[in-house]
Structure formats: structure tokens, C-alpha cells
Image 1: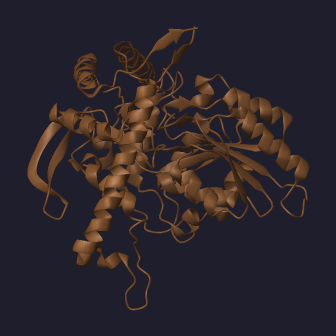
Image 2: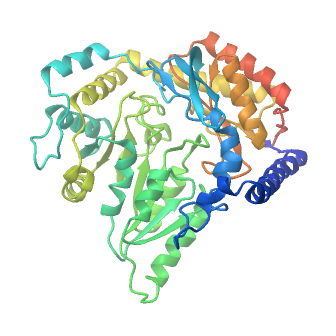
Image 3: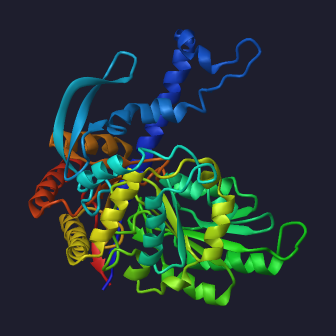
Length: 475
């Protein structure tokens, strides 16, 4: 049995109409403002023979759309973002800037990637690491001796993911951005999913080879691109294509969807290419023992050439890793700018990750991973029952609820904050223009009472904002 969700035609029309009205009114305000208050727009026009850094058209989205909703993003918090989080309240001043009021409120935290509830759990172990090791290794391994805890972490990650070796980086975003360019050469080809994270797009943009993108999880399109590259070769010269690197994510964080890994591996048996999987959101959160999508989908780890992940989600820390065979890891140690020019991961951060990794492999840790899947299924099932449009994998702790209308982005966020619930709303450019959503992030730390209270509030807000648009039909 599968459920097909139908979006009402009225919802599609009103979403486009809302954007149309906002854009028209924004341009009207700019037109009138430039005539009546030219000084306010002075910085958007040429002066002294120099072109402006910002133009009215180039900054239109920021000023006229994002600027109306920016109180819903970048809300400052204080303390550990665990089951609850303290949100610092802000107000808009006369210049339109957000200023702190000095007040705060404790909210149920449905916006942090604290999937396994490890945030703040190992503070005592971290304090011991501060006393035993330097606070930071302020230099790359070529200038300073390697941190023993980082070396231990690399071995533990490689063992955990059934790989020969692994390399650890101090920053999650840079793990992709500073690694992908060094996996390819001129004449090679990168093929990336269209909904990959911005760190992957950044890394592919500065790569020396051609980059192609295929529709999200569109296996047929992926095969066509691979076939064309192998048959036709390189552009203009038509010389044989070099290496082909396919880059996907284990769990797509904005969709909560799982990669079609078995279908991609079926292609891998037909065509020669390397497979790179970003497991930022799936490592620790998916699979019986938290080993990610390979375990979740019952796929042999050896069939994946490179497994990338971050420690900023399930591990409650910072940094990232790549696990692969020794040849690939040795290549990255020699070529990666982040390794050769950046700082090493601080020992206190490595300690947090090692403790989390140790707990994940205990009976209690494995039970917690299953509890996370149970809570994800329950929360998603209840939202479906209420009539919301919810997308994504049933066991995924990222639960996107579709809002569509731009006006509902702000109202949903503000109404949840009023009810002491902290959520993350997402709109363009992080999603397609008409696919605005709220993204709930569940955690082992959440109790059944927490989830039921959140569901009660969401149910009420859904009625007020007209969000219960789903029409499910079994087929």
C-alpha cells in the first residue's frame, strides 16, 4: 500500500499569487521610493564613475521578501541546545534591524540536529581532555605533531564504517568544500544530485572538471548522463572521459528523503564510476546501530567508494570525516588544503565524538537509536492523520511539513514561538520558491509528552493557518 498525496489546486494558485503580490508591491515601493526618497537608494546607483556593489534588482529578494520575515531566522539562543533551548527574544527597531530585548524564554527544541540527545552529555570527559591536552592544535599536521585523539578517532570511524582508513576534518562544511576538488582532475566528470547540500555545490564549483546535475533521485536521468559521457567523451575534443564521480546524500535534510542507493548501485554494476555519499544527517540516526543508509538499506559498505559525514548532528560536536580505502585517504592527506593549511580538530571536540561513538556501540546506545526511529514514525504518522502534507522517509528524524504560502512561513514560526516551541522554517533559496516548509528535527531526548504537546500546538496552528491540505488515497 502506498499513499499518494494530492495538493489542492487552490493551494498552488494562492501560493503563486502571494509571491506575485509581494513582488509587485515591492517593485512599486522601490519605484515610488526612488522618486520621493532618493537618498535612501543612493548606494544602489553609480557614483563617481563606479558601479554600485548592490543594485535594486540584485538585492530585491533580501529587502522585500526576506526582510519581512527575518525575525523567523537566526534567532539567538544560549545554553546547550538539548531537549529544551533558551531563545533570546528580539524586536525590530526603526531601521528595520533586529535588536535583543534582554528577555528570553525556554522552548521545546524541535529545531536542532541533536538526534541522539548527546549534546552536553560528556562535559566531564571534555573537561578532563582540556587538562590533559592543549586547548587547540593551532596549525596543520605538516607543522605540528598530529593530535593523538584525532588519530584515534580516524581509526574508530574507519572501523565503525568497515573501511580501511578515514580522515577527520575540523569543519563539516569544509569537509566537502575542501575535499571534492582534489578527488578529480581536468577531463573527469562530477555528477551531483540537484538537491545536494550547498557545501557539495561549493566543492563542485571550484573543481577543475565538468559538473553535471541530475534531477533529485532521478535514476533514469543519472543513467542518461553517464551513458552520454561514456559514449561521447569530453566536450569538443571527444576524448574518452576520465573518472566519473557521482555525489549524493544519504538523507536529504530539506526533504527528509533517503537516497535510492540500491538503484544507483545497480547502475554501478553497469557503468564504471565512483560513488560519494554525504551522510551528514544519516550517520548515527539511521540503521539499527547508527551506521547510516548502507545499514538502513542493507547494502554492502564495500560497494561505496567514499563515505562522508559530519559530527555536528548525531555526535553533538563539530567537524567531519571521509572514510574510504587507504589510497584515497592518503591522496587526501597529501592534497587537501584543509589538512595542509588548516588547524587540526581540537582535542576536546575529538573527546566528545569518541565518547558518543563508544556509547552508540553499547546496548543502551543501540536502544536509543531504535527509540529515535520509533519517535520519528509516531510523529510523522500523527501529522499525516491530522491532514498535513508531510514528506520524507518514515524512520528519518527530519520531518518536513509543507507550508507553501510565503505568509504562512512567518506566522507558523511566530505562533510556535508564542507557544514556547522552537522550530525551523525554510524557504527560498534553501528550497524551491513554492515549496516553503517547516522542518521538525526529533531527538532521543524528547519524551512522548513533549511530542504530544508539540502535536497539540501544531494541530491548532494548522487549523488557524489552513495547513491541513493533504488528501491521501491508498493505491
